[in-house]
Length: 484
Ligand code: 2AM
Image (cartoon, rainbow, N blue to C red; front, side, top):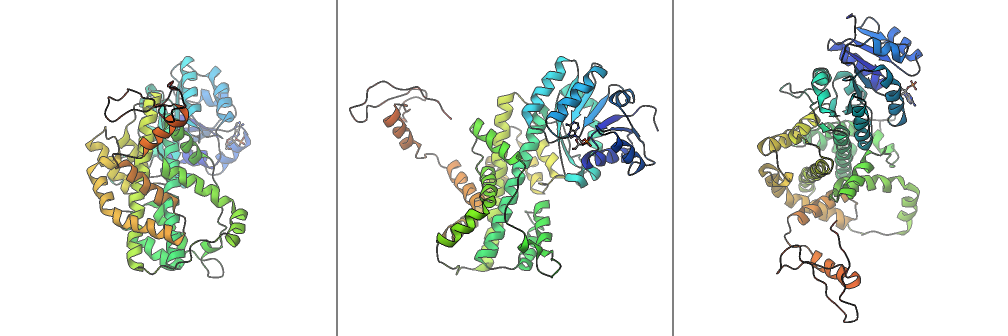
């Protein structure tokens, strides 16, 4: 073992342990530390036995065991634990040393910590890590941001342990300044919410409109996974549908329909509202989980509130084909909206984001990995300044080609009374996006009528505001206005 370790890792829960083993397997020497020090001993005697991994019994020992500039990765509970370790580490570190937070941190905390450590001459990186326990061990998607000067020192190790795509490119690259890495991880999670909701809507339409069995749906997802929809989430859905409980019945049918959430989808929706970005699909996915969790209310309502009493008499094969188009088109909308939000956040926070690189980071290792992300990478390679994915030729044409089927699916869900908020709201966004004149002229008139909020006119320059005394009773004094 080398005299000094390449990196230290604090936090011996499963993600931390697996990342250490991953680093070690790539040839790095690692020092392990944990608040409850007995876990260091049991790790060294267990999974780390015989490997280039040393333990530290204290922060001092950890710091003394590292090559300079020191690199210490925190894999502890997000929040106070990160701040506590930073405070414990500061007195022992020297200018240029690097602290990396690999936890599920909210990006404003990473913005704050990057600035705080910069004042102390230290470099901070906040990185999203996606791929779960298995990914941590075999190759996760890693999304680092923070102090750009730190990147050259950690690039090799982070890229070596990350997932690789077919051509060997690592699913890890520099994301941007401050909290950009954790922001992009948050968007990843939001997109994950959207992708899962879309699949669930397709599932419910197959189950409740077409009356398909789990085995039949398994076949459909297996086929979809061979085409444009090829992705981890379609693949696991295929396998879930085939999984039988002890009595031979599909396990999925016995699972209670109340979805949990840990908050990253909600964070994504809140930022979208704050920045005025129409992130409709992901927001609907979050609200769908909220509706699902109100099970008692739904059960009671189902006994008294009637929906339409129609049965589907269309072509079953065609609807399955249409569902595939609806899923793919809606997914494009969701990513287009997620990218819009990243662009706006980059403007707001002064980040320089590499949009194609982000698609590549998500291409492998993480929950939303899919071949589709290769198309997004291509779109940004062609035009790094692409304003909206829907303006890229490939995506525009794909959505145009899919829209007939997509509209049939939305219409079927609506007439049959099956909730499909992600698929239908994505279609409404698409129609809003491609409509030159929306009814907001009337809305502005209403605002001016009741609140003297003023309006602009199509026959005058932008920026000139008018107020009308609509009833003859109001005054001519306009109120101040702002644009959301
Ligand atoms: P522990 O083993 O001492 O509980 C995941 O929970 C990891 O975060 C574990 O390594 C855990 O350490 C650590 N952790 C959780 N809360 C912490 C806190 N407040 N301070 C330090 N470490 C903490």
